[in-house]
View 1 (cartoon, rainbow, N blue to C red):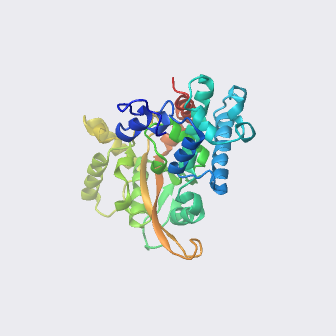
View 2 (spheres, helix red, strand yellow):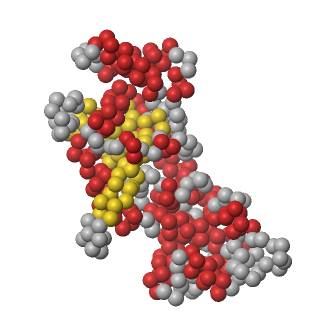
Length: 368
């Protein structure tokens, strides 16, 4: 990369845009790498030594993952891929991918080389994190307390095993979200230019479905009072609530406390009607609703969502003789029955959501 500028006044637009203009490396249209030596130096700085067999095999692994992602998940035509970069046998030296991404004689080869590198870059970050090494411990320590609190008899409940007489919260459904595979993470990262691998917070999580809005807020109260979540660990900039504004909810509940004290005289359904009346009577109540922007998700998808962090403790046997701790994020979604039904059909359908992500990912791989 060094030594190919023709003037004292020349600066490489691709690298400078990333370092000093806030651009993403994924969105750079080309590289300035013109020899195997430059490519090797670039990869060394990136973190991989091509003369190290393990490092080299890892790079070829990411090359294969990129090919599978583009042809099987993004449904790109394999016959459109230039032969010289399609396989290890044809490419022969992984460094040529960087050189091909820097030349302009063959525009198709250059565009596809860049697409491979973009995919590989995101796979590197998606598969080189703490979850890759400690997925079992992370899932056990985060999901275990939630799963232990869910009780099934004739109905599904959140039930306290710590506090005698603590009210149960009826649920319509509960499930642990399957952890995001690296492929799903890569598509998400490609689809959203502002997303970074270290900012994928919903790799694992849980979803509660309740019958009423009031029950949804009861779920929050239960999780906090049972210390299943630690509210200081919640990341406020990642929260969404387009179900019901908190201020208005508290106003209704405070009136009920004054009127009924500790006596439970109203059902959650009746309280929901009072909540609905409150919204109708207020001109500004909806200002209390907010939702983290997601261009691929329908507005019908109304819920309370937050990201919290769990301090994961890795014992010495799992960590090569030493003990260490780290925080890992997880997502909690809470929605009522009507929102859940809307999510299962219509525009909010999960498949439609994924299709929009795929379309955006393809556009990112092959910018105009």
